[in-house]
Image 1 (tube, rainbow, N blue to C red):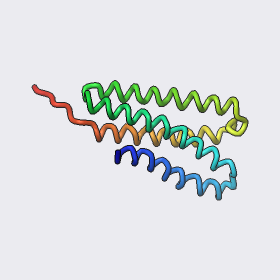
Image 2 (tube, rainbow, N blue to C red):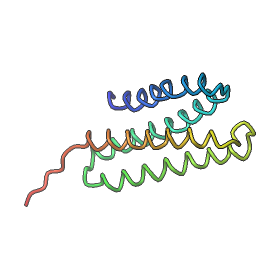
Image 3 (spheres, helix red, strand yellow):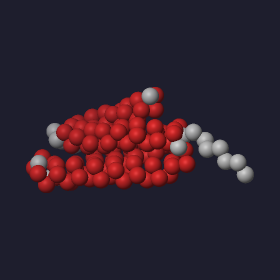
Image 4 (cartoon, rainbow, N blue to C red):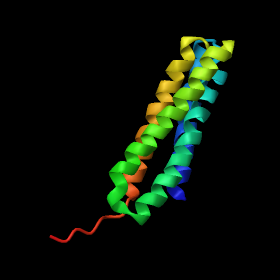
Length: 128
């Protein structure tokens, strides 16, 4: 539960650290919307796949690599699908700035999720 809290808190902290200066320095009113949607779009699938992957890896540590690859693929597909719908259907997101925010938060949450999953995985007992 603590690792899930860290997975949720760290991207939100990064959002505050990046969005506030960009909003004021670039005088971009849409920075809040673009960055906020991007962080939420990355956090929801990250939290879902983290919970599922963590449970599966605790039951069967041998499936760790397969679960990590599967979770990454599911996240990528989900985020990309929603992002494309937003870009093509909502004029506010048609600008390239949204994609920059999305890439920053996607790679940050992906790296954080994989790190938390790998550090929290139970060691597999291998008898030589």
